[in-house]
Image (cartoon, rainbow, N blue to C red):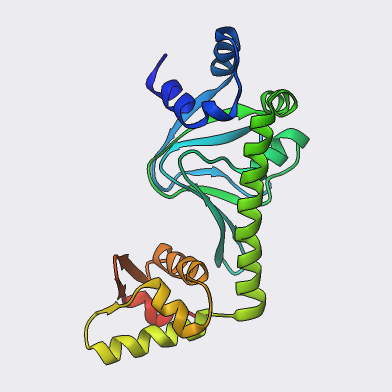
Length: 222
């Protein structure tokens, strides 16, 4: 057993109910492994999805891009997690509706749709794992819809950071995500999502308890 296979079993084995040694060998034989450098596109919107990633290390970002080129993150996939959109597409042969990018150097095991279908039918633990992942992602997307459709927090957060920087007199704003959320009357998760998107666009730098406002911050739409 190689390192990738051992890590796959360590992170996901409890959800698979492999039973016999032969069952484990069949599953490991059906998986393939990829090591993705940061910045690698794993899937683009509209492509067919033949296999589903189970992340072993690193992070994958799932996002949509508008016609103007603006991106909005739907969710991220870390170690011990899988991509629910990929599960749906792989099983039903549909086209992937978003884009998947490796945010950092990432390793993942990939299982094809027919393998997942067998696991889903035979393993209650695997069904429970997939459904829990689905519930978690749905909660994130619902929160995103609330943020985009109802709150429009980008401008007030931009204004708040600008005011705090002026008041504190430094290049970096000293504030936690929770403190910013309390100022704006929203949740920490919503603020963290916006800040992470801004960091991805090079507008800010995030560190513990501080937010550095970089040159592109001034050009953010408000």
